[in-house]
Amino acid sequence: MQDNILNAFAEQAKTMYAPMSKFNSLFVENMEKMTEFQLNAIKSYADMGLDQMKQASEIKDAESMQTFTAAQAEAASSLNKKIMDDAKALSDMAMDFKAQVEGIMEEARTSAAATTTTATTTKSKSKAA
Image (cartoon, rainbow, N blue to C red; front, side):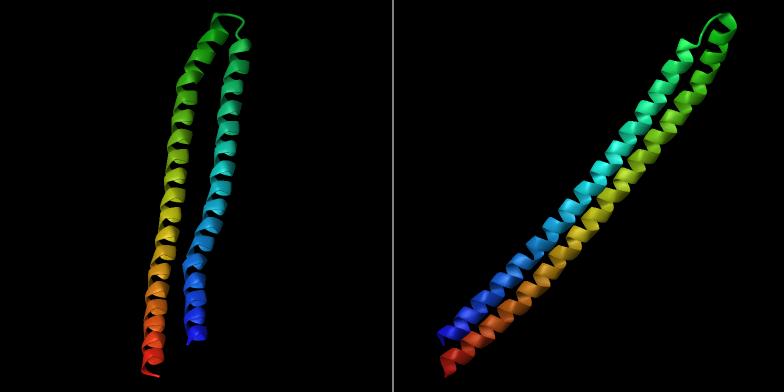
């Protein structure tokens, strides 16, 4: 009887910790993706800013100033598009993470219910014997 109880307890422990392990792995994987995404975004924004600084440093006269000023609208538009694309990509990554976490939680609920049913059945059989 004690063996049955200990086996049921061990099975419940496995069932309980498996989703946590999956969640931790998913969390680390997501953090790696987010970090890589953010580093790439920072680099591209820094490159855009440095490019603008280089263009500004090349202003020598009124004509080059006019050319630079005209190009600023295009640069601002490009920056705005990049920001919107990055925000969408970040949102998509968050939604994917959320869906995966919900999948793990549903799997944990199903598994816990099955383990509880098995433990209850085992306990009932032990009392009957």
